[in-house]
Image (cartoon, rainbow, N blue to C red; front, side, top):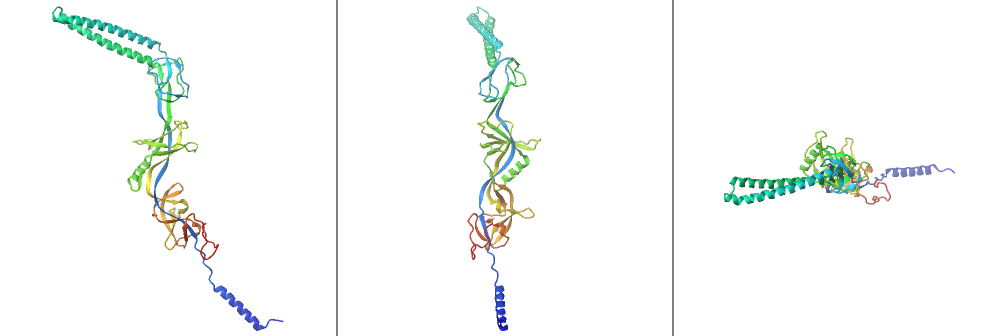
Length: 389
């Protein structure tokens, strides 16, 4: 049997009312996204700069002969460590030993003549007082005695010179350090006036690193120091070697040159590093990292919280009043580790959003939570979307 016409109308009316009732209900609003924030605070931050440099020996001495003669022996191993005072070369001492003996004999002769002259002057003195001899004879005798004494002093000095020259036939190491190759061989004639050294000694522990900094950067640094909020930093320096590895031991900045090299427009800074294992050799190219100033009352923002607008200006998203996101432009010109150094646009206590930024737009309601805390389900729906991402 078919459904009566009246029943059909009733069922159609009921269906239409149900549809209209469902349409009249409002769709639920999506929950506010969760925003992980960090609270800004001020701190003192050392600002590092990386500069090129080259290593230089702490001490270097060119070994030169101080007398002329034939090299009889070389008494060191090339490339070894030598100690100050250690004999490196032996020059033939024959002529200098003979000169020493002659000077000693001359001194004995001068002493004998002094004794004779002094005795003669002593005998003439009472005779001159009695006018047994003329006063002129006594004056001459006294003068001869004084000349004999002067001759003794002269010959004593010559003897000392001969001793020094004989000692110089033994060529010692003037400093302790690593000795290079020998530039003369046994049997070679060397001279006290020669231009070339016999060998070179370098002290490599500690060792210097000469760092080049442009004069423009140095001027900017000094202006920064005269302004507020900056102070000179400690003199610690770190090195990066030519192969990219880090040198283990830190160094200390010693001084800065008081002049600018006109050829390069740079100022030389010198640092000293321990080098017990001899890893650093003179002439090596290195990169030096050092902090010349410390920024006081600095604000550091995690890099995840800083973005750039189409103009290239740095921006951050803050937790504003009423838990709404606020977009703000800041000045962030350099990084410190994994954070941006913000010099303008933020103050202590500001809450910068660093988590969930992909779901947040300016002026949008948010649910602020401390960064790093576990996500919480939004109120009004278990497991609803809107967590940090």
